[in-house]
Image 1 (cartoon, rainbow over the protein chains, first blue to last red):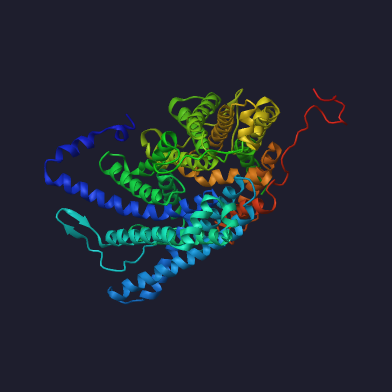
Image 2: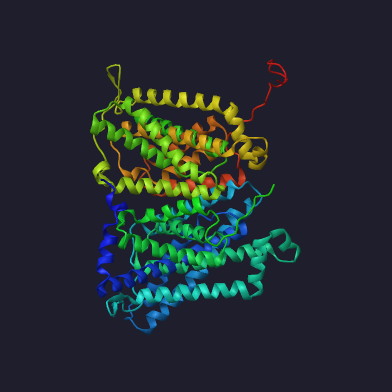
Length: 327
Length: 305
């Protein structure tokens, strides 16, 4: 009837018939590539949610809007540095400089938001910081719409984006960039948390704030640091999305929500889980549209369907641990 | 100008219904739901589709809007309410987006982004309640808000109200006292959803057309703002909050300054209200309604029961 495309497996069947020819396999790798790049971005953003949740036990609703700010800052700086120079080495360097400054800016913004809107509420009810975060998210997205207009902007390409053909699979240089950058960021973060003193302090704080404080850890500083890292990663995510899509004031809302779903899928509070969840969600979305024939208009609902299923079946996420609520 | 003020009052009424629903969910139950816009949309589309396609009268569609949103409240509530509060916020937000997404894409039923126009005006005993003439419509809305207010007020003082308050204060203690927490949470959620459905129905018959663009996340945040601003856990405060927020959102048009105030001004202000209220006055303008059990010493109703 009205929703047949959603439930039919017509295209799945077709796909498996095509499987005998080389096109099917190429198509599969094509979607795999697209899904991985999308998933890499989700993973970067999901890390911010999961880190903040791990320490403060609340959802930072404004995270998606920090991503949007990061994308705008990156866009403006890149255009400024690039000037009218032709594509080449300088534009690539300029892109990375813009990205690093945007990361720093977003980190400061994240710390500022935490200091002003969440820190006074640390001892309040559970509802209070959530409401405050929704308020911050609204302030950020609407201020951006006011200052930069409601139209969407295109991020200028830092290098030639002519697709590369690997057999029948088409890969754009952007996808390579997205994969490399997101992977690098995740590895750096993982090393930071597992190997450094600061990372150890972060893990301790997320396990038990009181005990961490007794061990001489400056918990306030760790919380600030968490927000700074999460926001910097969000800025990277924002810029990477901007390369493939557009920059606009509400771009963070949907992306942020999906990244949150990714964090929940992986087990919120779990860093490797967020990375895995992000990539899984990216793949599900791409394959859901391409192979299971879910209409593109309903693409966004896939993430929420996944969320509700996960919450029903395994609320602690794929890698989360079950927490007993204590009196 | 005066006409415009009437318009604000009508919208305050429609939103007050939603705010009352949000108050029973968030103020009494302590659950952060962000999906009033979704139920609002379901109510609106129920009325719009039944009146234009099937020739129903407005009054006939009201119970349908009510039951349909209640049903969706149950469907979304049952799986999510077993979980911790933060998940609920996201899951309900997702549900609101799904509703809008479906309305936008289900062309054969909802006419997609174009929406449905020419919804008939409600007729009561041969008298047409014309939204353009506003007075009659305002009275109708006022009656709806009054009924909802009285019902909720009674409800809050019933066994269910007390159970919800206990659940909000401490789930584990409430459970230990033998309160079935999931049951009461789902009840609250269904009630909140169903009044939002009624509000949607009224909105459809007031604007005489519906489009998916009306039912954005913004609406849910506005409703939440109303409850927080007025004071959580106080039904009078929700109505007051609805009026203040509507006044703010139409302030530029009311004063004729809409040219010089940017369109995003109100939304930024709503965000600020949420943050500032949480930090400096979390109990809202009026504060929570407290009730003394068994009658206080001075009111002559007798002692403890």
